[in-house]
Length: 273
Image (tube, rainbow, N blue to C red):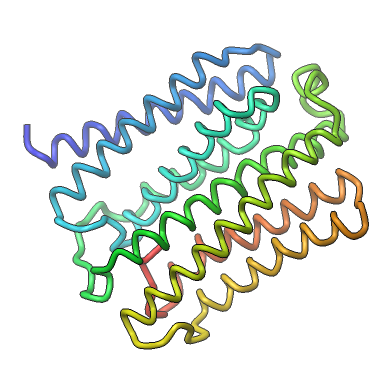
């Protein structure tokens, strides 16, 4: 079996596993079930298959596959699903967050299927270890923010009486708020490291650390939004509902930054995230 067949087989199998995991998560929420082992197994199998698909493509094209829209979206879906799997395994008390965030991942997955699965080359400026470090930290940042988003969604949905007994049996809002706060603190750390690594990459590739291109500007806006969210909670002891709204707004800004700007900007880093 050649690499193209391996890539396609594992890629489509991964998407089926992701879709089944999303369906199981929503079914569990609506019918108040707890198929936690099944859901974790589906997500883990999907992630392993997706990893194999990306590995096969990487081997086939000879470079990190982030050179076009399909490859960027595939890498982002992989990163988001990895975050859900890790969060689901490490945070057993709030596993219901998966039902909140998996539909978002499915939307990105649907978007991923729109562009052609063509192969493109990367410019010489991408041939640096700092690109890998930069992308890794940004993926960690988005993953931590995604888990915080899911927990924030639980707080708001429960306040409106949505989710029934499945959300009612979860820890109190104050506990959920503390967990989301810790995830956002991790997001700030990873985003900071990602920006620093990106600046070092820019210096190595183009001779300057910062050029105020659209993606850099919006990366800074995102960083400031995370910092503001954490600062308001620490300084004014805002309610869990307020903190949840701030987290959702911050994630929306981050989503626009990393899923919007790279696809419309003609900046130097187009295609890097």
